[in-house]
Image 1 (cartoon, one colour):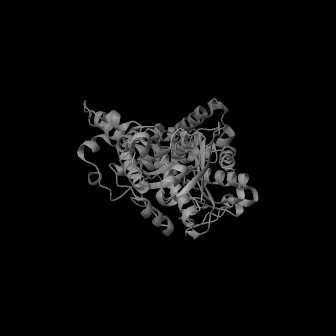
Image 2: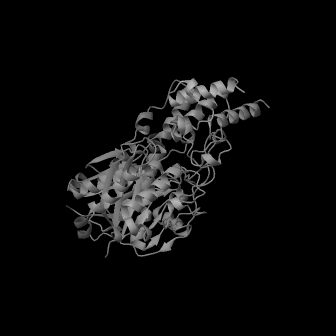
Image 3: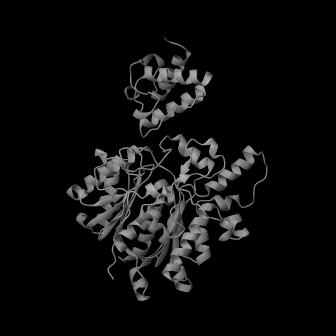
Length: 404
Length: 88
């Protein structure tokens, strides 16, 4: 089996418009969640979110591109541009044929759907823009990334709700590991902060109206975010031969299904995914120093996740650190695992553990070291990234510190 | 005192629990009727639609809600309050 390393990272989210700014915000424990600035916000009960602010699509894309790029596609393209730029790769000839793109998203072009349903239902129009279909489709982001950078190998989109990005990155990892591709652009993107997107979540009664406080006894729900994260996954020999800077090694991956409930998480399903990722990477549990939690800030997730970690790690659960960066950037749904992988890279590469901010009060059902409120320095050899989706679909990735 | 609100709330809870209205007792908790947290969210939605009210309820902290969901009787009382406030 081939080894897989990360040679580029990019993002845009509520904490920053690139990876460096995002990691700095995580180090400082800054909160990117604020009042939503969207149409008809006065008709929403939930009015906060991790919205990407200070972003002007016209500064990055021309008129023809904007006609085709939903906000989730724009975020994917911005993130991919940063990641590929950092990797120093260009895709031509044989390499292009052996390189692809797998991205996660849950809602795809939801903003485009929202705007156009409005046009036909609310405004009574009988005509919509000719590009509504290619703009809203879930694979639009992956396709535009492939077109822009000439990626001609295996390319597709993965949709598993809140685990989409982790499932996507797991596919990219396995494609390279098995020899089907040499380079994969992977991660995920989401832009659900439109009236219909927030209204739908509101209905489920699991959203907080004030803040995302994972693991804190005072938590009262999740907060939606938006944005994207993209990475260059590259076969180790290929990266080494060209002298590429290696950010981290992708060491293991596992996925499980709870086969139980459409919204309530299962401790067993989560624990099996965590254990599976360690077994896949032949990682001794006591070598795992950090877990980026799914940590949504709901009553159900946080206690189930902590119980799953305690089951999977036994006594070592008390020695490792586990934090939820959703407290800062919100829950990017299908894009969330990609932004959260940045925190895992920071842990293994820089030895900095992103905090869980908004932490107020100890919860005996979440009695792990959740790195409350302030980042910490620690040398970490392996980090895990958890994602447990609605529908009971779980995906856990393991990163390894790259010595060198 | 049985009234229209009580009849309608019991009907909503019975539908949610897939029981007959006469099988519902006022001192039962939603869980006794087999209504889980997601079922409760759905029942509350039905209450909002039926009475045209807004029920303050967060599934993450049901016990902190101003809307008492501990028993069928409590739910009926809470809905009566909301209907009264709405008329005021």
